[in-house]
Image (cartoon, rainbow, N blue to C red; front, top):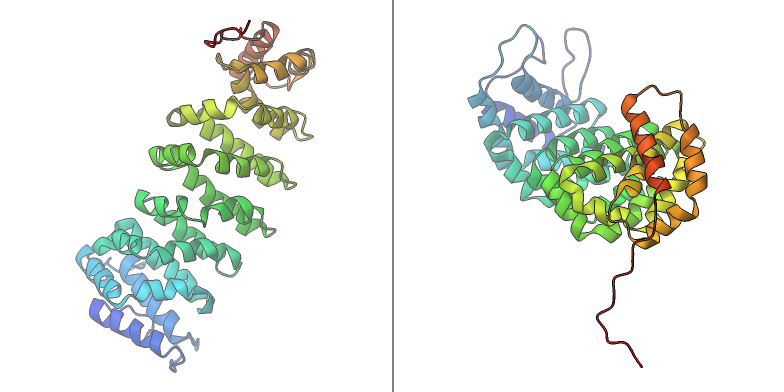
Length: 342
């Protein structure tokens, strides 16, 4: 008899999981191959099979899956498992993530609203990046969660968000740092109206921290952050954000330095942000003055910049920038309304 044969009764599955969590060291008989798996992992696997089905078996009905979700919500089981994920065996962690993701993706029995009412869950998933053993499991649950705008809002407007800027995308573990950046990108691009309002109300703090990413000593972080910045600024929903960003001279200086980066890839990404500064018809004089001061060097640089690229749009954009730089002049100062002193 296969010990992993799923029990199709949701009540039994929920009951057996609850009992396993309360007594995780309960003895388990080996399967037909002599393999012994702990009781929590076994019960989680049975639930996962009910939700996803298995090769050669019929999928469980949506009604049974919804009933199972309702029972686990009533028991508050999944939050307990998520909050204690690091204490679970390796396979059990994977099962928890797959079950959570199924519930949240299908919003079974109002699971999204249920998680929304427990902000400690989203916070725990974010903090999961601090433990390499559970970071990737937490990352998948976090990205699945923030597909829902209400849960993305929780993270954006929490102190946890700033940990992505300051800590998580810089983590030395490549897999964990890359996963954190994928979540970071989702947070800043998935829900456009939500992100636009957030960046507008947190502009100074967000871009002060973002500019630090652009000067990271880590090449991957620097390149990914620069590419993402271009996507954010050039998104139509962020037009006002873009205008605020490209009217600041310090931001222009950062882009000009990145144009000189030793990496051709970073130079290319920097070009796509730099061109917006130059093309802006409403450049403030402090930005225009920097461009004027460096006009000859910039034109000479652009004339030789990545000429091996055969992309017609890129060639056209370079030519436009060179022409625009050539015709630069400071805007006339607006007359003051104040009366002149004798």
